[in-house]
Length: 282
Image 1 (cartoon, rainbow, N blue to C red):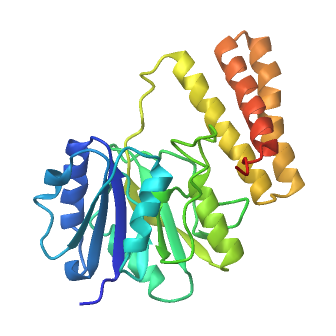
Image 2: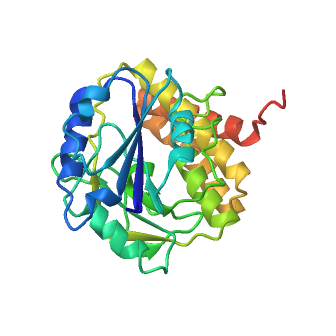
């Protein structure tokens, strides 16, 4: 039977979370499991986490060494057999109607992609999302993250491995937006935001020290800055992105909140550096 949806997933060592995802995948309603393919790029030794996977689902297993998230997904992309592709995190999980809701939009043929919302264990939104359905634009991606978008598979496009977690240039974010923007700009994809398409993901609690968090904000900001130049965002948007942390420096300094003042400083510095950063040619 023809594969309809290919799911690409990777992990280093999250067996408990992977088991939760498998359970949620097994509980999908109004889908033919024989039309699903789960591609798992294993960076450790997690194969036994899939022992309870519905046997009707085609399981494609690839063993690799530790690598960036973008690279792992690129390992999986050539193995896609489905008409549509999605990228669940190892610690996310689905509602019983997640795949059927995504397919309902995609199979109408008006859009080449659909994105939804992500909520935590308590059903609380983990990002900012529009309250109404909408169409994504380059400056308004409706809170889309890789776990919440479902796309017509494009065999020509890969994730930019210079961006995201594990970036060799400390461009710690932007690979998801870059992938979406590339589909929209180069391949004329129209992507729909549907507010009742739900994926769950735990909110990472701030258990790290302030030094770790500041490094994270700085790295993510470098990725954001690089992305703005790569995709030639409008000048008003760039000014806004630079203006917010710049204003934050002075606001939090006056309030005596030196952690948030330093955070704003590093975000401003990171966005400037990322915007003007050029990938080495050698």
